[in-house]
Every structure is written in C-alpha cells, then in structure tokens.
Image (cartoon, rainbow over the protein chains, first blue to last red):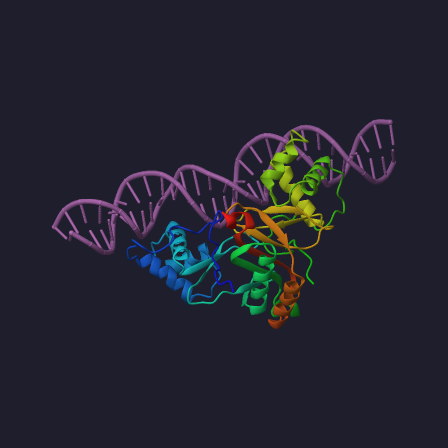
Length: 149
Length: 149
DNA sequence: GGCATAGTGATAACGATTATCATTATCCCA
DNA sequence: TGGGATAATGATAATCGTTATCACTATGCC
C-alpha cells in the first residue's frame, strides 16, 4: 500500500529541506504545526496565516510558507493541490493516508480511503512497469448536504 | 462509470462558456485544437502557444488561454492540474477518460485506466453519501525507463 | 558571554493566469 | 452585398499565490 501524501520530486511547491537535521527550535513553526493539528484540516497558507496571527500577532506570511515547507519536508505536514491550484495543508505522520471527496458546491472536503483502490493502484502501476511512490485521488461532486438542495 | 475529466464548478481555471452556442468561426481556435489533437498531449498553455506560433505567427498567449477555456467549456479539450500547479491540456470528447502515471524523474506522463478502480471510486463516494461528477487520479513515481537507471 | 548561523518579517520579484481595451473579423439581415 | 452588431484578437496591465532577497533577531553550542 502507498502511504505517502506529499509528492517527492517534481517542481514541488512546499519543500525546504528533506529532514529536520540542524533545525533550531522555533515558536512560529510550533505554532503553525499546532494550527494544523488543531484546525479543521485542508487549510490554505493564507488561512493558516490568519489562524497563526491570533497566537503570534507579528508572524509574517513568508514565515508561514517557510514553516509549511519545512513541516512537509520532515513529514509532519502534507500538502495537496486541488483543481483550483491553491495548495492546502494537513497534519501528516500520525494520520493515515486518505483521498479526498471535494464538494464543488460548498467546497467542503471529505477524507476517505478504500484499501482496495489503494491496492488496485499498485496493480495498475505495475501493469505499466511504473514504480509508484505516491498518489493523489480527488473525487469532485456534491456532498450529501448540497445534493439534497 | 465516471467519464468526465474536466472539473465542472469550483474555482476552475479554464472555463469561458458552457457550450459553443453563439460562437463564431475562429482559425486560432481551430489551430489550437489541431495542436492538441496532433501533439503528444499533456501540453501546457505555453507549449501550446509555442506550437501554435508555427502556424499562426501572430497569435497571442491570451488567445491561447481563451481558446483553451472555450474548448474545455464545450468538451473538446480537458484540463488537468498536476502537483506542480501548472495546467496541462489534452483533447477530449472522442478520447476516453484516463488517469495519469507521472514520472517524477523525467516528467513523462503515462495514460492508464482501470475499470475496477473507476467502479470502486463510485462505491467509495456512495459510502460517504457523495454524488461524484468527476475525478482525478494521479500516481507519482518512476517510469520503467527511469527506474532502471 | 560571544559567535556562527538558523529563523524572521517586510517586501520585491516571479510566473501562470485573467482582465482590460482598442482594433479586427465574422456573420446575420436588410 | 454592404452595413452593423458583436465575437474574437493582440498587447499589455493586473492579479494572486508563492518564492527570493536582505537586513535584523534569536538560538544554541563552545
């Protein structure tokens, strides 16, 4: 089964360094990780910045981007880029891999996983002699709330 | 089975109008569709512009974006946005839906489809009372060429 | 305590995409 | 068949998320 969410290579937006070696303690980074783990998930950098400002009123947007890169780089956060092209972040590591059901009406995200799909993806890759390292599955449509309207 | 590639709503980059009603004939649009259908697929707007310039030396990049929006809107082209956030385009309509295996080393794209995965996605959505309209599956890793190196 | 250097904030720069606007081309209809 | 309404176009400014730069600050090791 594939369990990585963060994309490894490729022109990859959020990547500062590959691990935490040599990193110093940083209250901003901790605050941002805290925002990630305590928040609703799937936050954009801007939303994370807004939330972080409540704890650290002087934190800058650049620091948020840097911290997100860093946290992705050392596996504490995961980035994913939906169809609108704006990166969103969620805590990773302790949390299991999941795919996303994205409501095109209200914009909400549902996390879901189907072990059989995961397994079939590996098979599909193998069929094309492709060595998978990560994947991304997004299903767009209407959530139960919006479908009822 | 889900067969739509283009995403319907959502802050969606390439969408000008939902159909071709009221559209006038346009040699640029035709040239761009021709670039799409005769090219290798998965081209970015810039690459499409470069190719179109060989046929129409004065065509502007804005026209390329407009034409792509238009072609996506009337189902003749499909847009997809990989992890680097840069939109890529391929001809649609006559071509069947497929997912993408994307090589993180050489950047090549492999088109693939697994009917069973398609089916399971519908099931997964249903399990969350979600009404799917389209989806996107991207598997990142190494193509057979790059894995051998 | 002091020094090397990682972290930070402000802000400029960047790149893909979109909007604007004046001009040109298309097509309908008298 | 030649206006006239308006869609299409090209040049370019604007936008927006993200990244780079740079001067300054904080951390942690000696």
